[in-house]
Each structure stands twice: as structure tokens, then as C-alpha cells.
Length: 288
Image (tube, rainbow, N blue to C red; front, side, top):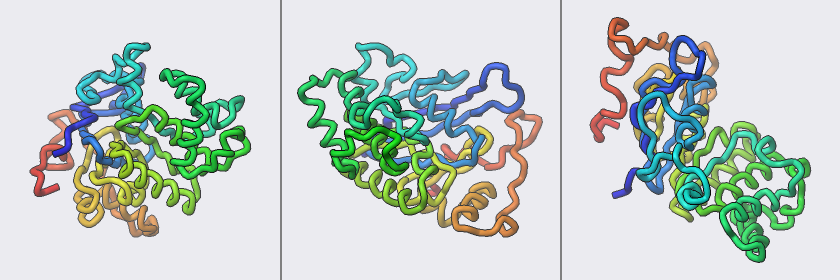
């Protein structure tokens, strides 16, 4: 039986000065070791905020975040580097996340240096990481401006793998790529997950993308989980109108043929019952 690796329990987050609905409102999800959870929703649903909370870059207003029992917000400084190394991030826009003044190999070597890998070992380690993500090691000498979008994303993945992580948080890592390159990168994620038994929180607005990669899917709308289940069940029989609308968009249905999504209801007791009769994370396993 797999163990819970990343656990977010009843997370609420509101940005300073914000009014109205919180960015996240009572969100719970679990990523088990070696498994992939797809987090799906439109822009503004709270996906990237949740990623920052999972990485310990933000502290929730309420609820708890635990990575293998640790609070990622407290992982700071040299003493915590071994634990921090186990939780890594793959960004949406790798060009913006790579230092333009460093060669691609130097960006990966910098991570190795930070985590104590001796200088003489770094070139071979960097070349091996490039090979692992399907890049010619000769590309270590290129600057980011000399690489394509797909190559840059592979460099970002190599950098994330440099510390030997147990879990990757991937925030829309294929959305900026064309369909052909997107498919190649998704195949790479599948291969890496199987080879290294990696866990992954894979964030996307595209239900078709997470269907190909994830075992479980969590659907987020306006900061609340509206549906959760196995990827196969959510794809075959979505229960919430919003999930059905995302599915219609993923399968190319024209806008006029997509389901109408009712307004999100407030959590306030006076506003009535939630859109789902039972919170998704409490559904019996055989109904998921």
C-alpha cells in the first residue's frame, strides 16, 4: 500500500487586501508516493496558489500542508537541504526561470553545487541528466536563447531531477508548447515517473493532458474542489457540470455545445447546500 507523501488538509488562503472569495477555500488533497494527481481548473481557479502552498512558498491562512510529515514552510537553510531536495518544482515558463547569463548546463550544475555535489563530479552528472530527459549533452553549452521551448522545458525538468526528488510539483509545464512537443514532454514525464517511482502534482487547465498522466484527478473551481476521483472515472462519467464543461473543451466541442455551469455557491450556511452533496474527499472509495 502506498503512503501519503503530500497532504493538504482543509486549506484556506486569502491574499492580503483581497476581498470576496478566498483564493483557496477548504481544499484537501493527497498525493501518494509514486503516484500522480492531476489538478485541473481554469485560470483563476487557485491552482498556482495551491502549488506555492505545497512548495512552502506561501503559508495558508487555515489548514495544514505536510510533505512526508514535514511542514514545507519550515524547510529553510542548510540543515533542511536534504529534505528540501526531495520536493522540486517544474515551472510553466522555463525561459523565465532560467538565468539568461548562464549556459543550460551551468543552471543544472548550480543546483548540484547548492546541494553539495563536488565540482569534479558535476559535469558528468549534468550530462547524465541531459541524456535522461532526452537532450544531447552537447546542449549543456547553449544559452537559453539558443534553445527551443521544448528543449528549455527539458532543461527545467533536468534541473528539478538534479536533487533526486521524491515529488515534483508541475505548474502547467506543457501549456506553452505546441501539441507535438507537448506529447513528447508528457511521454517523458510518464517515463521518468516509472523509472524513478516519482510522485507528481501535475497542474493543468486541460483535462485531456492530466488524463494521460494522472491516476487521480482533482477539479478546482473558484478555489474549491468540486470533483475528485480516478482519472478514468472522471473522464468517463464526470459528475459536476464544471467538470463536464472542461471535458467538452478538452475534446474540442464548440462553445455552444458545452454544458452550462451554474454559479458557484458560497460556503456560508445561509447560502444553502454545496454543489456536491458530499465533499469529494469523503466519497467512499468504490464511488470514486
